[in-house]
Amino acid sequence: MSPQEKVQTALFSEALYCKNEQKRPPIWIMRQAGRYMPEYKKIRAQYDFWDMCRIPEIASEVTLLPINLLDVDAAVLFSDILLIVEALGRGVSFEDKIGPVIDRPITCERDIDLLPQIAVEEKLSFITEIIHNLKGTLKVPLIGLCGGPFTVASYLIEGMSSKTLKLTKKWAFQQEASFHKLLDKIADLSIEFINLQIDAGADAVQIFDSWANFLAYPQFLDFSLRYLNKICNGIKDPNFPLILFAKGSSIFAKELATTSAKALSIDWNAHLPDIRQIVGPQVALQGNLDPFVLYGNKETITREAKKLLHDMEGDKGFIFNLGHGVLPDLAFDNVRHLVDLVKSHA
Ligand code: CP3
Image (cartoon, rainbow, N blue to C red; front, side, top):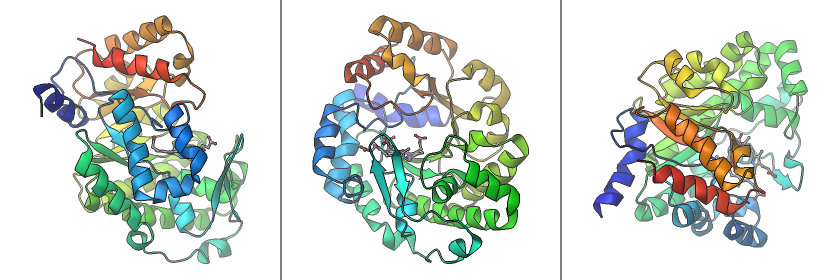
């Protein structure tokens, strides 16, 4: 390994533990393997999305695309938070312009009771093989993934992405006990799913509670944070680094920082130095460039990225990322420009 490669390998992990002494922060991008990449689209045209997640050779190849084409500082396992929903026997398909569509959304407590008892490590054993494959090749850390129980529950109930989460929130206010039963079940499965990824060799796991921002403060504590805590406290290695992400999460940063997660991934609304003030120096902060900046030209991207680099200059726990996933119709060259810019920051 060259000295430069050694620095790159260590960068993400050092920032995760708030110990990055280098001039530049590490960078990776949420949804970094996706449709904005012509190479992804070529593979996607040949395979069903779930086959891409399940066939170890394909999942590994897709995970490596952004490493080979962008040289980002961390890889993220090519998979999806709805894999748990699939494993529960509720088929998920991805319809053009609609997004995920869940077969037979759940509508009552009986549906929860009838969800099958599954052994995650058996049902999702292909994940172990994919992580083993990747760890044999990768020179940068591998981030695994898991959905937040509230967000996964919302897909099971709504059956698709929703602008209001009306069915989910109605359920939560009308039948609180059964809603908790569902969240608790998903949290248990999530713990098993993360343990599987820890055993296989993942270096960190990001939990996506993407839709927690739909909740008012008391319900955020009760329906989101409580189960994120259950996961943080339930995984087999209490020191294993977890990263928490929720879109709109900056309003809850103080509460999220009370968990044992090593890092918070912050949406683009927040001014990161303010969040640093709120959470203190011990938790890493990831984010938070508005993904829409990447629709601008290279000068605009440079200007906006430099503002963020300047804001977080010298912060030992800063991981450069977007505030949410990269959008599918973005120009690949613009994403590459961003990565090159951050990597050349001195
Ligand atoms: O970050 C990565 O590159 C790792 C892989 C990853 C995917 N989805 C791949 C994917 C991760 C971490 C996710 C997380 C995910 N999936 C979340 C949480 C993060 C977020 O964006 O809020 C959510 C809510 C989902 C559910 C889901 N899966 C959605 C909303 C979609 C998009 C549907 C669409 O049509 O755009 C998916 C499908 C999906 N997951 C794709 C990818 C690359 C696109 C599938 C395709 O190629 O058709």
